[in-house]
Image 1: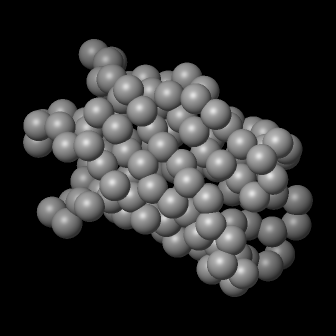
Image 2: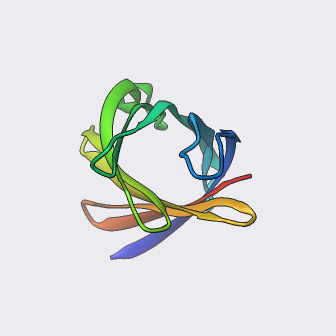
Length: 124
């Protein structure tokens, strides 16, 4: 199994410190070949049961594989949020973001047929 690495930059709409941001957006980058695409979580709403709802857009290299404005339910963790990018074209991601003093930091990973893909996420 080979391992691929990618980086992802974020921007966020700031909400009060105790709340989740109303949106997160950024760009992921596949480091080996420079492939880069955008993603966003819009209309993030905290729920009383420590989950959240949002609309997810996650572009892929092949536009047919993009997730566009899909409603998702994620969960709040002790330090941030976690959610799944729904499977399209046999590709899905598990995403975790944690709140730090410098902003939102996290990872996204998947295990497709034959290799893993890891994305580093950051929101300032």
